Length: 109
Image (cartoon, rainbow, N blue to C red; front, side):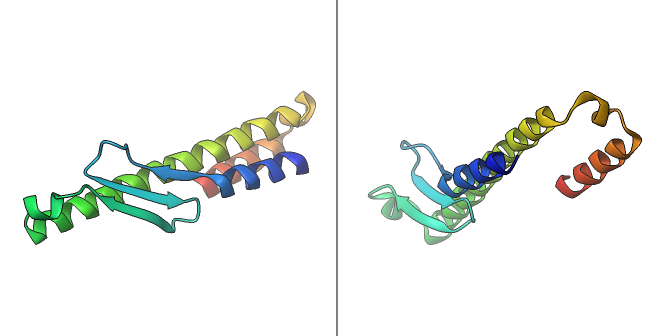
């Protein structure tokens, strides 16, 4: 199980979330939520008002933050599934296993 956790850490640390290359504003975040890059299409600042540009940048930041959350959640879900596969059937049927599972789902939810 420890190997699975190390794999999860490595995958999570390498994760980057980004918008599409065709977007007017491209944002890149790392797995810790740090802004790595923000590119504005050349000329966009002349096409929009300051408020419109600000709104578009904020929307791109918000959209990418949501993509990042979903990406990290998917990595974590794969870890939980792999760990669950390691637990023998007789232990999964134990009443304490249900309580532990419910507690873990509460923490993730």
